[in-house]
Amino acid sequence: MSDVDVNRVQDILFPPPPLIPTPNSHQQHPPPPRGNRHDHTPAEVEQTTTTTSSDDTAVIDQGDSNNDDDDTPIVPSTGNGNGNGKRGLAYNSSSPSLQVFANSEISWVHSWSSSHFDAPSEFLFVPTLWGDGPPHTDNWVTLAEGHPYLMSFNEPDIIGQADMTVGDAVTAYKRLMFPLRKNGVQIGAPSVCSGSGNNDRGVPMGTRWLREFLEQCDDPDSCVTDFVSGHWYGCPDGTCSVSDDVSSFKGYVDDLISTADGRDVWVPEFQRYGDEAGQREFLEDVLPWLDSSAVVRYAYYMVIDGILTTGGEVNALGGAYAGI
Image 1 (cartoon, rainbow, N blue to C red):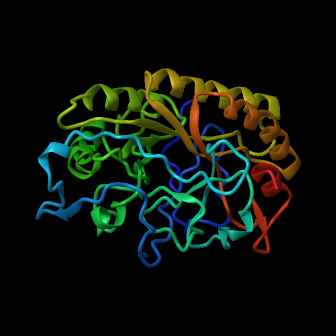
Image 2: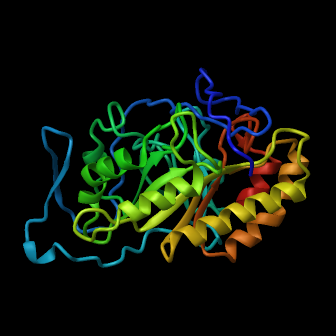
């Protein structure tokens, strides 16, 4: 994919509608609406006592020091569908009820935040620490507790998103994410975009940013990543064929897998632009490929009227994605 024009930061609410980038640009999402914080349904993990120090560092009291290195894997719910646990939903407070996706291939959900917005308990909710400061860090430790998977920093390689240098991200990750990696909880590297080159701050983008992060976050005592995460968007309307977007997407995912170097790979945000027919054709190709690939979890952008729903109900595209 060509270099990203990171100067194009959209000063609008997120979403709807989804932003359509100009050629050779990456869609840049403002942070999703924060909404109200909710209590989360505890996952089946060994409970720990967590507090936050005066500098926002996550501090975990394990109680029994003999359990500090207990990395027993957690087996989360895979939903009520017939899927393999990979297929998920990206949503926020503007989304209709996710209950319309019950009894489908969907097994997990994320909201770009630590708020679950009353998502049905049949879906595994994965919290995200969107950025490294307030309001994203407010109550993060409390809201993250009890969840078997945690995602970090949304597109730190994009100006207008988490917007972090690799060094700053590593420092924040050590402080806010690594202390939560106890009792089988898995934590993810920041989610990068699919761009290349450098942004206007001279910060590398895409898998280059991710590679540098993984090189610097490689200390079993202070910085470890269990999975990597990447976002992808296709060409603007009419500028690429479906087959071109399929090829671009698969190439990007293969690059993520290579960069992961044995870690799990997530693609929690991806979309082809264009009409419903083109998006369905794209999904018909990439979904079976994803299901047979090394990708562990993925989510199409997003549950909102005009994309996966219409009038609060699953539309044809949403049904094709969710296997309804």
